Length: 155
Image (tube, rainbow, N blue to C red):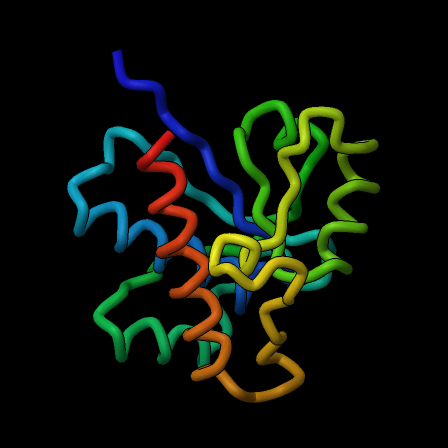
């Protein structure tokens, strides 16, 4: 029996970084024929964008790389997500603080930063909502997701 690894990507609004990471990771998993080993989703730590689709510039960045994110709607992380997912991958330290508040702590050490998997421990994925630099965000996310997949595939 194959153990499924359940990963939840988290950012502030679930319309830029976390859905980009979700769909990049799904694409990497698909291209490596590992769909049976992974369940991947994303969520927000805030309620500000609930129900909204992926932000257009993020959607365009995904599309320009052949990745479809149709049907995505922002949702807020819940306490139950902590029990449901094996790993909660945050884009920045603020997301970690908010995730810890939502989950009432991290006794199983599931809450991590994405760039820790890109040999950039402690660094944050820049928020393109503020920077407008979706190319830099793309590079961060791809590097983090590739490192995460490498580590999870070795497990």
